[in-house]
Image (cartoon, rainbow, N blue to C red; front, side, top):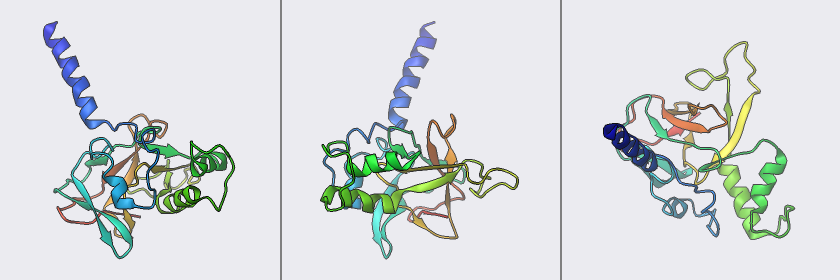
Length: 197
């Protein structure tokens, strides 16, 4: 009985180490335009990263790089809806994010600097995930390819696009209602840049 209690305690502690904190709730007052400084606000583990990564400037803006060797199939980052991932099921939810929680005006104001900063952030980080995708993230013939999850990470991953992707998005074990994870599509070596398609 004591061994089971000890095991339960160790599993709870492990969950605290590997699960992301609520970065969404702690995002007040951040500069959405400073992508690299945004990353330094939380530790890798707090953001849900399961491997060591680092951000560097690239010709395309902020880029994400492996800081260790990563095996194909590894979960790179755990995404939990409402913690470190936002899902936008409709335009009203997207607009609510753009306006921001501290705004007394709940309508978009294109002249507001914070609003414009969030628009740029969304432009860089919102992505769509096909819920009926194959293991490479492509639509499966005969399945609804319009069944998509739209959202963004807080803070964003910093992954740039390439037809030679080395990462993909995969439903969390509990499905997209739980979140979407970032997974290594192939072996990724230390120093290599991450790409998605």
